[in-house]
Length: 360
Image (cartoon, rainbow, N blue to C red; front, top):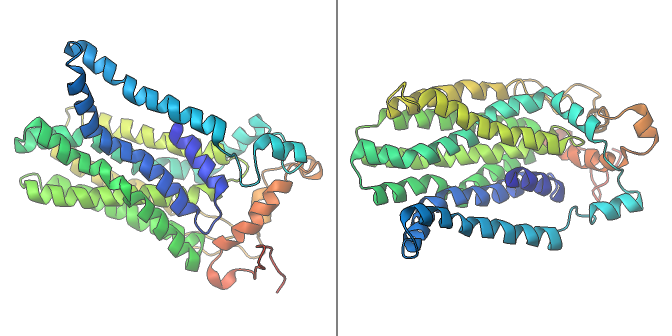
């Protein structure tokens, strides 16, 4: 829930030039907690053993992250700003945005096939990260006869890569988009996530060598988290009106991907190293769903844009004529104008200093 809310918030707070980097950094530092948890929670638990038996100590340990959640939640509630233009209530009162129609927003979101493609592909980057966070320390412990503390520390390296790796994926997406637009973002996502799958296969095949496993695991983690960053560099453009719905479903796709991969590969049907190998093959296969993602005004991986289709045509299609006449869609026009930056560099309109499209 925190992840989805944060990705929606950062998507509306930053423009197209840096939204990939912004989304990737906020999410990456959030996922960094997955690595910190591997070594911090056992330390907290061990410290609490002084004050009670094990069955009480592990329960008391949960109060530490719980209290941190409440503290940060209160900071957001009282000190955060909703939009660059101010708080929602202020923008609605000033007439800059309308009261949202929740039912129509939900329907528009689930009708967009691009969202469902991204739900599946995100399930095999973030979902894989969640799966690896669960299995990597026990795998190192069982496969290489390490003690539990060492296995936990080595396993935490997988999550700790979030300190920079997810941001790198967002930056790569922004850099490719600067020249190639949305088509560059899609190619970057496909290449990064396919490499992730290949490294996953390699990690499974190197089950006899601890040093080789660790080296490949670190690069595997790097590309997993880069793929997550590259994914959420695309998400803000799927639907402006239904951005929250799209971000929520795609984020949930990550959790669902973890459930699927653990149920298929790590519930006893295969040895762990074989499960990792087969999971890599599935990553490569599912990542092919990036190919059909197509935006008529920008194109897709293999197809160019449709002639004459503009960003305003695409984003205003989510509104009825009555809503357009009532001014409900007025705030979307500003985003549509900004989104012209997702065209290939040679096709972009000239912009003045206020980012208003100028006629050629």
